Length: 252
Image (cartoon, rainbow, N blue to C red; front, top):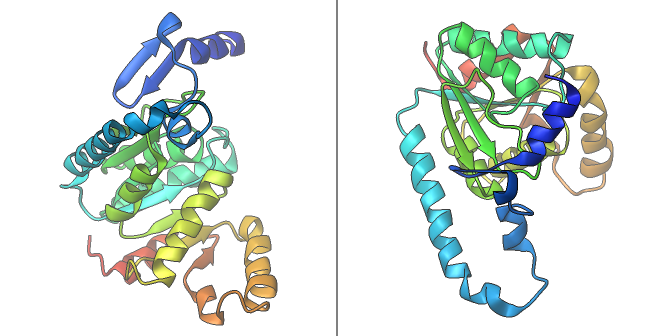
């Protein structure tokens, strides 16, 4: 499929949770955007109770779909990671190694690093899970996902990542990846979750962030020295799997 035809399809197709809209039925914006946008008339006051019901239904659907997962690790990383690159192949290797260790692999369900980890898990005959999100330009659930759930609201999706995983492995990624990383760090720091290993994969990518946390955040008194022990940095797939296995007490 050419780049132009892919772009045309992205404009003509929209997934709103379980609902698919195409062509003239595509709606502007996303559900999150409509919830957070306070401009316009006050009609939204009368629709918020219905939004609560929709939010509740997303939790119910997510809990129902994921309740019987085996021990799982959430893998995060950039949707822009290209197939065939060393980063992509590392994601495949990581997903495969986690599945061989007996973990289900949970990703955001999209392309790039997420697809790579799902691919590795599927090839190892593990449980490959994708938790998608409604976006203005829908990426869709990648073909290597065996259990897929699409969410309208980021906060519901983020709950599922933490609730049904015993740890995170974070590949190089952008703002969404950083969002998930700092959410997890905050939950561990405040002891909302316990025994939750967080592994940053790729020392050359993450070293600048780690230096900033140490030299600016901790040095400036905005966090404690102990907070730097809430995560590990590695360049080894074997070490990443060993870390999450040891800290979760998981046995294959």
